[in-house]
Length: 262
Length: 262
Image (cartoon, rainbow over all chains, first blue to last red; front, side, top):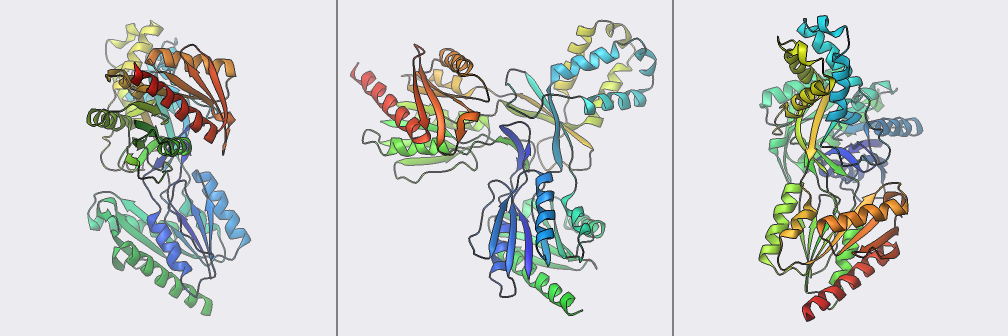
């Protein structure tokens, strides 16, 4: 049985020196990888991990570093094409946004002023919503500095326009035969009901077998509350990182074996 | 002799899960700290380091983790107030920009449209520069989401307004008696002449004793070209991380001893 695990946080480049990332440490992904590796049923674990993620040591684990979302997607496609992957556990904290452009507030303001000083602009300003559409189109398409080199730090206000990244989890639908898929949903300070709702919606939308739902406010070192949700919305509750890792490994291995029989 | 070293990269929060940081690994700062610690002349090294910075192991080195620029400044002031610091080596890769606000492009566009649909706006649009001033003032003061919690990922374009952070290096001027100060300047893909010019200007502006000038394109693993510039603009050239560390330790210790004699 071969398992693909994503772990840690993605990093989206602003320029050659700066990037946007998240506080993910990869601790849980590391634990899950170790727990899979310690199972006799598992032959190999591919661990795609972000910069600065905590890393396990095991001969069964192949560690593959990744940066931004696009690189993660390409790497997943390559690993799945080159290996028979029985299950994917997608615990990586993925940037929802990549950097579309960076520019000074001054450059954007001068550009907008130029457009608005144009001859025919007066009338369209009468309709507030149409004006908002017009402005949003200008702002989101405004080209700033290129992401090559380092942005000089002599502008007073730097603005970054972030666009949605593709959802890594939706890529898994491409693969046949379908591996067992475990998605993750992390929210912050919501009710348990909302957390389960959002996680179950993610499961249905992306055709996952399971989703591990957790809340930032219920994570503190080894203590880590997680709900493993299945298609029928039933849940298994775990209270520590190791319980989560054990629960995922057991559940995934069982489902892989069932599928192998059929 | 007590040395304060800053190392690694700062991290500026966007919200509870996302932050902006840089590719600094803290490798050079770690090497400098180790080299100071191995000198008989040095009693203690305070190493202020960013998240994910590489860390040395030595009984002489006190490691102090820091996040954003404000936290680094407060920590430096505390360490200098509580200890006699003979020299400061400021190798940290500091964010030039902190997060002032985050908002959707839609929210900003609707706000601007509302302002421009106002009755008296027609006339002021005639003057392009005045309009740009007006727009820039609106954009840079636009309040977005608070940095508490996690920004929901359901907006199409997220915009971040980044404002200049205070210069950590300028804080060192506050301290009496003045420690020996070594600043760092990292540029990317510039000529040696420009690099030295910029580094020397930094030295004069911030009253440093030395500045280590280096270029991103001349750093690759242990190979690391650095120019240690003094007030008279004379330079010592180093080719590896260890050469840089040795050069800084030797130069700093010599100057500290000279000052102690006077």
